[in-house]
View 1 (cartoon, rainbow, N blue to C red):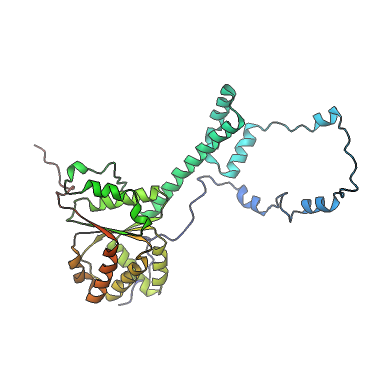
View 2: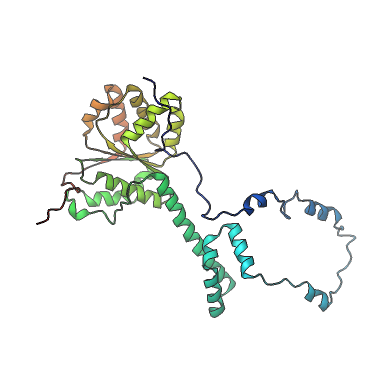
Length: 319
């Protein structure tokens, strides 16, 4: 059976975050114009060749008051500032400029304080936008967080151990996390919450179901792109593989998965959620020696958290 060649969208291609939500038609034209400060600029070249040498330079002459007054720069209008901010894609400053100008007129802050207020607002806005971009690219199914996790409903979770992982020290050491427990106990929620914390800290992350990952590996066999797939996954700081369980796998898929985990070992962190104990992995991955080597790498630098508790998906009984 020949693998299908359709490309999956589960693993995003590597792209740069958008600079801003706003785009202007002047962007393309502005890049083709030569800056007056560019060394290759004709105007700068002319200025360099036509300026007199120091020895032949004439002494400065006094400028009359009428001349200086005629060359006074006009104050930019609000429309001028709006166009400049749009061209620079400073959307937050553009949105609050009117408010900040009114505040400056009333409070008379220093120039540095006024500038700092504007730049601080723009920086915070960009951080929020870039975080949303990373979350979207990571494919988080839900916005689980450690602050909103229902700890009181799941006594089987060692809260102190999970909160310690939230410091993300395991990422710096390229350690792995494995959550083991039956269906519905909150394994995916905890893995997603830790991934969200990593994204908030500026790390690159990806959440993917185990079946989708192995399907992607199977498709990569058709166009011989397995190497590119592994390279893309190696760029992910924190990879979350959800619902690792009894899957119908081909030997080639298991081989690619082993290669991926082998290369991530000691370099990148991986979180796995599963309802299987480690000894059960031999049944669905096959090849005893390969699975043994895989588990040896996975568990060497690893924290395993077993959750024994009620399902969080149980419907609430109503009288």
